Image 1 (cartoon, rainbow, N blue to C red):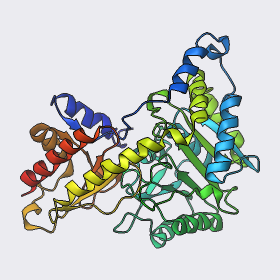
Image 2 (tube, rainbow, N blue to C red; image 1 turned 90 degrees about the vertical axis):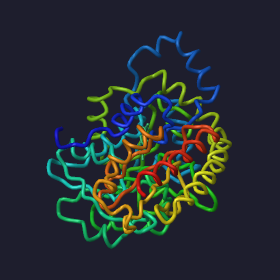
Image 3 (tube, protein in one colour; image 1 turned 30 degrees about the vertical axis):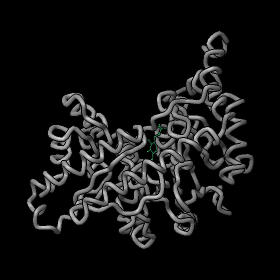
Image 4 (cartoon, protein in one colour; image 1 turned 60 degrees about the horizontal axis):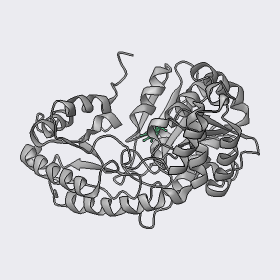
Length: 390
Ligand SMILES: Cc1ncc(COP(=O)(O)O)c(C=O)c1O
């Protein structure tokens, strides 16, 4: 555990608490809560004895049924054919189960950088190695780099699209290539699709699990946390090949027994409201994203923001080639993040948490706040970075 990174959101959260009035562009959460239907269903379930008992480890039937229908109609994934769907306590748990199911001590899992910190943490806690591979200037996966990183110990390649922390939406062709590479080399493709509904402009999300022949080696994970404002209810789900059924259930039964029943009842009702619930929120986020990109553009040439068409993040890159930022102290992302909080009352997450150790990067999250607050926060960020870096 000593060699595993500390949860950065908690670390930044502690700093924020010491600087009251700080606007947090840190944690990856949305500003809205669950649909009314979900709250009503949870309230009604309180008087049902079944709510208070252990239930099936895979998930309650009504939720599994709705997820199965959603996966088929929205993701092109047919779970009746050689696959299973399991409800988990969030997509983080789905990832932990997948790692436990497919690895032995000392195995390797390939993570394109930037990655989601909890993925690296889960891999290392399982006694495996997270192998970091670079992406291109737009944070798109590089198949050559991934292929070059494969060794006899490699068990899986992870893709996150839309991406946390970069906001990049991976192209369909690159996801197809990664999926085919996994098939050809006997690896699993772990596809994290937590932000599937959050795309902007012409960007479209595509599920790797829908590609022909993907069923036997693709593990796809989803969450209600973002789409339905459900983060505290802890509901996610994972689709995996039939041959992993026993291993996945061993992990689920040991860690969770069954997902919290009241949360599942609420989730089933949320699924009843469906994708339409998140659509107005995503449109609102699109407008906020425009403000974020426009305001951050003012930082050029000191810093730049590669195009990001999804999720609710941008990964800001400080241009270290400029003379002003060349000193080591001025380019240490954690030191800068601390100063931004202390002196400018705005919080962002430093790049090393996502594996961006070469250079100076910050993730800016704009999902949790109202438009005016985000604009104020980005204003503080621009002013703060200018003062600190110049
Ligand atoms: C890429 C990614 N995967 C998984 C998760 C975890 O989601 P959940 O709340 O469902 O555990 C997050 C949350 O921020 C995420 O960004």
